[in-house]
Length: 518
Image (cartoon, rainbow, N blue to C red):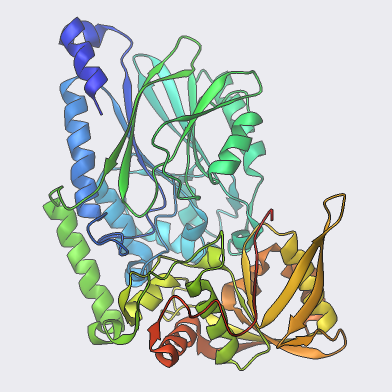
């Protein structure tokens, strides 16, 4: 990055460059998920202290050339590791402040604590960056801390107003957790605000979204006034800007920078007379051990690790519970050994007929070798309450075969991958392309519609429902939260297996996986 700027500086001279319409440098991250130390799967990558050094280096180079900089994050900066639980999220807000961001978007994993806790969090912490969101609404008299959320951030460059506008996902899988508020349709809100900002004299509107790459493309398709999209949520590494036409036929760039502080995205851009963004140079800076750690952030991370060890017990976290001869991959696109092991662990923990596992809700993959308790926690780092540091519980549900079949029909047309342990079936596709589930087998026997089956669900699937439990909840008369946690179930399964090999997991017991759009 900055190669083009250096060439411009040499050709024009510093004073001439300053007199021109100046380029603007955007530095951006997304989906950090509080991976303070490293990416975990590859410990040579990531780390906030190294990311901070990379940010400061880019800012220093830009300052020498009189180039303004915006440093942005696309959301999901809280839940995702055990560090999130330290000090009820407050340490993460403070570390984000030390990183030097101008604005940070709200992602779905930033509100899973619930509306009230979110309000307390933002009320309690002083920070210098702006937290952005335009489509989350709550009673600010009840939750005054949420007054700190702003729909946009304004920047003035050479008399040109640039607004950074932010919207977050309204996905049913997560929206329910913002329990005392409402998440409005992001496309509608983004376009309303973009239009309003242009009428206010804003020349360029940048959408800092937490919608995912596919929905960012849809957003541009449906917009007229958005000039650049900086995304998050899908953890997509976009090393070259992805251009797509808006409703006026104008090409708009979409960028995103991976996840877990593995990369710093850079975009050198120029504002055209129309307000459109012209990309001068796109860069991706890998955050590796070759980058020295910023001492201030390094000390903050060290303290956070000490707090995690105190909360859980260092010896507890580092206890080895098994080994793996293969990398254990949380896959949302195909059945993996680890998907199967997790699904089976839920089923076996309750001695249920069916185990339900949603790979979209999992965390990082586990590198082959020894498996510790912290590895298991990090592969399923989900918390619905800041008071429950042991994560989600397993729920026991009794349902008739008819309801189970209806549930499977919903999974077949749903938008999230789902693994069912103890179930097999085939999918029949009609000449018109309509899919039907046929020959359902549970426990090796044909499904009986009037028989009751026991089903083990992770807590978030019951409460979030993958967008479908609301349709069936009246039929589920027996729903019980057990004392078994997700971590307990997975650890017990790993201990039983001892060593996880490639041939395990995909053979033996029945298993099925629903893939969205397939």
